[in-house]
Image (tube, rainbow, N blue to C red; front, side, top):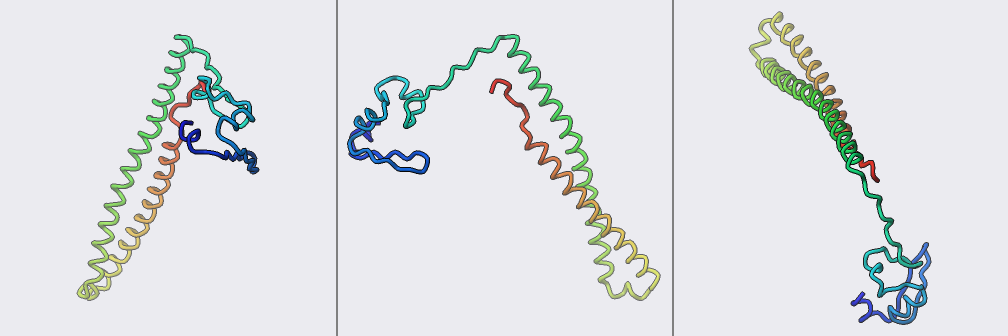
Length: 166
């Protein structure tokens, strides 16, 4: 307010997409709008073009109600933790299996890239079947991992505790 009082000589109020100029200092604007800028509430409340809006006082919560609210919040946090704990464990298991499948796939690809492998047609057929199975397993595990990751992300995005007082 001090800066506006010392510098401004025109106040422009913007409300609902319309600008209304008040040619004068801040006191002139406050007088025209009916604002009490000297009142203590002008600092604590929210100044609007229609006056000072003071926040509504919140009723005090009893000790029993606070304890019940905290207990409910703790139960919600614990339930969320249990849900995400199992999902995290499954996600870690799928991730480890995916690494194993990818390593097997890389090893089989390397063996198939060796020209000497193709001297034995039965060995080639076996390697190709194993390669295809490893690739399918790797794709399936990657899809499972993505699904579980999205599910975990959604669970973590949920508010852990809702404040019942608001």
